Image (cartoon, rainbow, N blue to C red; front, side, top):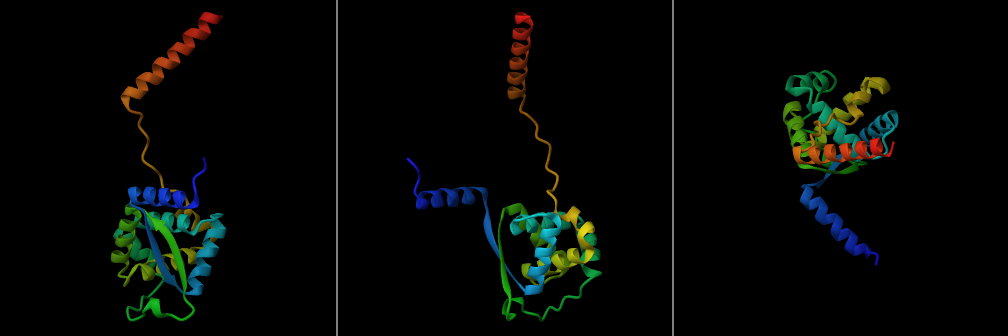
Length: 172
């Protein structure tokens, strides 16, 4: 029997809770939203959460000095500006796991931004100014750690491969 919509929603919420996923909401100006849309189009990315997550991790990999050079050389941040009260502002929402939230906290600290909205606005505009070709490395999946098969499973797979080889040799 198929699950009801409510059951599916509860199951999804439970998975997100177990994974430590949290919804982030960033209030930005329409120009920043358009810059993000351009970046997504250049990289052929459809999900803004995917683009933002990759952007956050790649920019954080630059380190404190790299972030300061990357963002600081392009924009001056007005600390008196309250992004939440800008008229005509738009909301960017995406779900982020703990590692992404930690990386974003580093970006806020390193860029001397007032909050997450200001830091992401700086990152989006700095990447947009790089142009369609130079921004692509920041909008690709970050490298993952290599997957190591546990020894127990490696032995089982090896034994199965040997059995298949013996079976093939025996059939010939």
